[in-house]
Length: 119
Image (cartoon, rainbow, N blue to C red; front, top):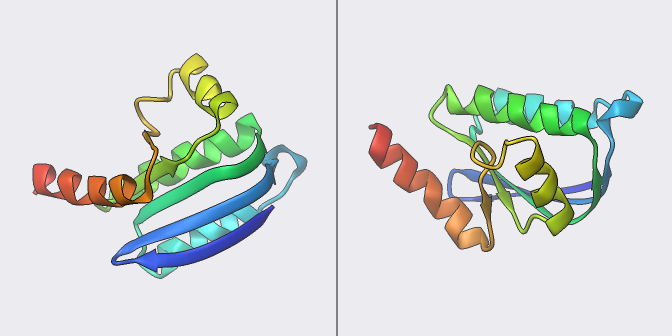
């Protein structure tokens, strides 16, 4: 898995590429989440456009990260999610928790809307 990280205001944007296969004992994704947490980054957009595969263990890590960040007025938004991953989210009924956006602008802006509603 390849990860490119950048900031858009107070939102961390992670561009992922390759296979997200956490079931093979890979802790790379968890290390990324730990690093974001230590830096106080709680608003995270994950671009899945170039992700070829997402296993259920990584899906669990995404949910855990979302909950962890949401407790601190943030969360995880998914960006450009491939149809096969959208279908998986729908099947396991997580598509209302891990919200998918088609554009980075909308994914980032949704954090501002959520902050205004909860504040």
